[in-house]
Amino acid sequence: MSEKVALVTGASSGIGEVTAHKLQELGYTVYGAARRVDRMKKLEEARMRTLALDVTDDASVTAAVEQIIAETGRIDVLVNNAGYGSYGSIEDTPLDEARRQFEVNIFGAMSLTQKVLPHMRAQRSGTIVNISSMGGKMYTPLGGWYHGTKFALEALSDSLRIEVEPFGIDVVIIEPGGIATEWGGIAADNVEKVSGSGAYAAQAKAVAKSLRGGVTAR
Image: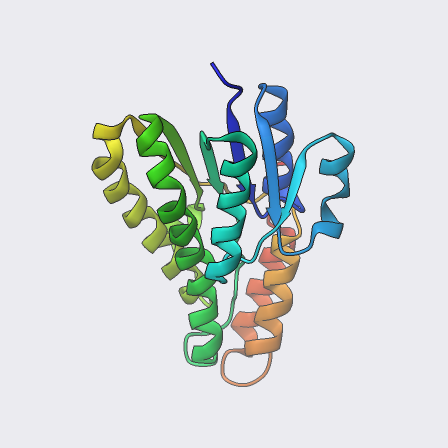
């Protein structure tokens, strides 16, 4: 049997980077993907393959999948980890930013899923791992747009699991809590930028403090 192949998005840091290393330890040929290849030096040093990938760009997604298939002939695991948290009140957040968050967190993941599924169906096997969040099960003030993407990801994943089970494909949802990555600081900066003044300023201050101090695991 050929060596199994995994594609991990958002692999330049945090959960994606750690996942890539773990999959390599398990014997997978790992492709780490992110917008900036220069931030994946650790993966390259560990002899993993890296790809420049913008999940919101259909041509970029298509090229990444085609390259993996051309080089290995298969994709066994897709880890949809690329995403970010855009915090701010529903009222304050520009709709263009809200749409962008859905483009990255939802449509980016589904675009890759659509591209890899024909290959997994042909193999009669495969696993799609969608990195959701506890934010897909609960909600907080000033996180509505982010929570919306994660609730959507949960629903899509659960429906997809039923659809692809007859083809030997599994769909897994991971729901992390607070983890020591760049995510919390970026989200905190964003909530202060969007809602740090005006009607929601007091809430923004409290939410930013929580985001920066809410790490429970490493």
